[in-house]
Length: 152
Ligand code: ZN
Image (cartoon, rainbow, N blue to C red; front, side, top):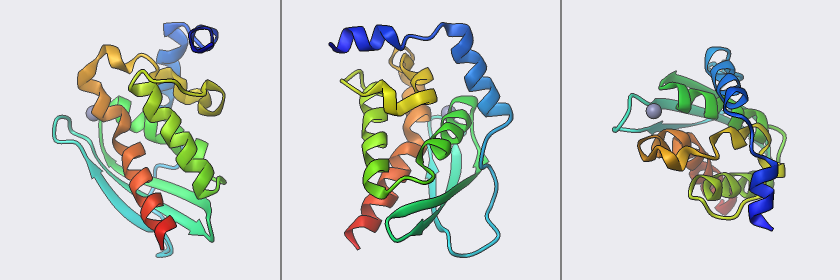
């Protein structure tokens, strides 16, 4: 049942904090790519300092690479770092499924913790409503970009 699933994946807060801090201080894939085959999308959140450009390289329907750069808070930078690690190498369909599960988790709906891996550190974001935008900004941007691309 969903309750048990949530319990099983409950991490202690120290571990959560260290994963978030690690991805904030040493984010993965935080750079501007030096070739123009990447699709760029800006995401920004007026209720925080978050302003992040996402750079996505698609080959057919596979996400070959994701880079990002910009100024943002610890939640926003760390979740974007984790998102890039989860989505690189996935098909658009797989990526949209992961994104949907993440959004469900943030909104306290049913989700599959197995496919979210490290991203479950944000499973109690609902307790801080002001951080929900920070936690979902780049995920929503990525979803929009992938949906636009899969319609083409
Ligand atoms: Zn923020």
